[in-house]
Structures are given as C-alpha cells and as structure tokens.
Image 1 (spheres, helix red, strand yellow):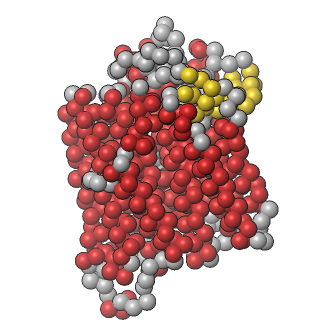
Image 2 (cartoon, rainbow, N blue to C red):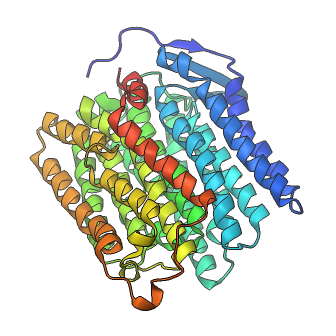
Image 3 (cartoon, rainbow, N blue to C red):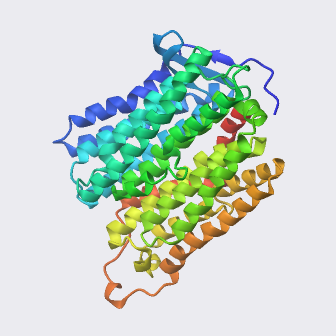
Length: 498
C-alpha cells in the first residue's frame, strides 16, 4: 500500500476529547456517593453512558472528513505527554465502547437486581472506571498515554472479577491481575523506554505506513521491540498468555460481557493493532517479514482455543474460549498487511463486540430465568425462552461468519486478505476455524430448540425480565444491521487504510 500523499488535517485544542474521557470518571465518582439511593445511582450510570455516547458521536463529522482531533492535556517531560486524539482508528473502538456501555448499563440494572447481587454501588463505579480507561485507550495520541490508560483498565476491573468475594472469585482475580500487570511491566514498559530513547518521543504518526522508529534502527532491535509489545499487551488473549481470561469467568455475567466485548480484551487487541500499524508500520513490518509469522502464530490460538471450546459444557467457559479464538482474527487480519486483511481485522473489533455481548447477555438471562449454566441442561429451553435463544442463534451466526450478520463481513475481508497475501495456510486456518465455530455454537441452539425438556422442568420457566431482554434484542439487532449495512463503520476503517 502506498502512503496517502496529502498531509493530515490536524485540529488542535479539541477540548471535547477531554470531556469524553472525563464523563465516565465523574460518573464513577458520583455513583460512589449514591450507596443509599439505588435508583439515583442507576440513573447516574445510565445518564453518563448516554452522554459519553453523544460526545463520541460529535467527533464523527470531522473524523470522516479525514481530520485528526488532538487535545494536549499536559506534558511530563520533553517528548512525553498525556495527549488525546480522535482519528479513524480511535473511532472504531470509541464507538464500540461508548455504545455498548449504554446497553450494558441497562442490562446490568436488570441482572443485578434480579440476582440480588451485593455491592452494587462498587460494581457500577468500577464498571464506569473501566470505561474511563477504555475510552482513554481509544483516544490516546501516544504510547505513554496508551500505557497509562491500559493499566487503569487492569486495576479498575480487578474488583469486578473478584466481585463474588469467594475463593473462586479471588483466585480468578489474582490470576487476572498477575498476568496483566506482570506482562506489562516485564515487556511493555521496557519497550516503551527503549522506543523513547531511540525516537525522543512516543507520539503516534498520522499514517500507518512508516511507523515511529528511525530507519537506521538495527533489525534485531526492531524485532525484539515488536515481540515485547505483542507479549506486553496480554489482554489480547494470545496463547499461552490467555489463562487469565477463562479464569475471570467467575465474575457476574455483566462483568463477563464487559471483559469480552466492551473493554478489557478489546483494549488488548486495540493496543496491539495500534502498535503494529503506528509504532512499527506496514512498511517496516513488511521489510522485516514480521507480519506473516505473526499471522500464523495467532492462527494457532484461533484453532486451539476453538478445539478447547468444543470440550466445555459450561456456557460461559465455552464463550470465553470462543473469545480467545475470535480476538486473534483481529490480529491475524492486521498481520496480513494487505488492504483487505487490515480492514477485516479492524472491522472485527466492532463485529465481534456486538455479537459477543449478545451471547454473554443471553447466558446471563438463561441463568436468571432458568438457573442453568451447563449446555447439557439446556435441552428444550428455547421453546420457553424463544427470544433469548433466538438472539443467541443469530449472534452465533455472526461468530461463525454467516450472512447476513456482521461476522460475515469480517470473514469475507479476511479470506480476501489471505488470498491477496498468497497465504493458502492462512486460508485453511480460517476455513477450519469456521467449521470449529459451527461445532461449538450449533449444538447450543439445536439443544435449546429441538432437545427434550425433562418433564419435571416443563413448568415455571419463562423469559428473563424485560430490563435484560430488551438490551439483548437491541445488541443482536445492531449486529444484524451492521452486517447488512457495514459501510457506516467501514468508513472509519477506510480512513485508517487510506
């Protein structure tokens, strides 16, 4: 790909970027004072989510026009600052995080009340703080700002993973925080320091072609920095640094949805792909042959996680390993370094998010309404919970990559990208993973609608409360809409690829 010839139109002092980041922080702090007023607490959470979404929407006209919005918060050292930025790449994740926070807040209100969860004030506050970190990551203008908000997400989601405050909760949370903070300190932080020494700053370039590193940087050093960055962003779920993710499934379902669709893992793949394209750049990665080996490396994760998912009877565990697999689609697409490959990888940030949050919402609804967690116990439930399992079936089609749901767009671009790169092996990985997707999703829907329900459980099971069901239907409807009309989000992807 040839770099864009025109100079990017940068709009400085765009203070509304700061407003976007500060909204969830203020929401979290306000929620903390509402412990004795649950209705007001939930109103603050929902109002904050709607306000954030509206502010993010205000960026769209300028970004679609090819402009880059920048807001310098403050400078720490020469070349080291906390600076925010909205460009096409930022908007992909910012739109996902802000829109899904709205849906997740309304779902959480129904779930937490129906399940009579404890510590709901802490839950809502930490949920908002996690979005604060996620939006900060999305709008980061440099590696230092990215790293700062990446760590904020890790710290603020720890109480959510440990929410149940039992042995399993603390064990899952401990594994979660150890994996993510250790990898960040061991690999990512040293890489950032060395890049700063080599370049003199950590600012992302405006284009994704040449990257940040000086042309005379030793090849072995570039390769080392690349590996350190890939491993340092362990939220991306690449094997073998994925074990924290299934362990975090002990958390309540809204937390699982946050981890897998809204914030944590999306922060991981966003940071990974932002680094691949803007720190190292397409030209450097092509010259040093970093892309295709990365594609095959994550291809192993795609296949192995899918095989493990086949063995899981617990629905949330199966969905967790599905997430491990699906995240690597994003990295694989970018690593192909072809126009369609990159576009397919980036659009999967959106497509996966809406489908996966639907699936986790459905898992929560099944647990609340039928008290079932195991797939083997869900025979016939689809006939008493048709909307929930219907939404699950549609979201499953998106994960599989079947039209007309959003995941089809991802698979199409990735398959074309693999052919553009002349990589038959990657093509076979994508086809095999699709077969495996069918293998672990289709039985859930089949059992639900065609399995025989035990006579003792025929009565008394119905759909979850409307406060949970409506967000499920909204999320799955959006997944279908962006599958039929993908151009709205693809426009931001096109801004990235030029």
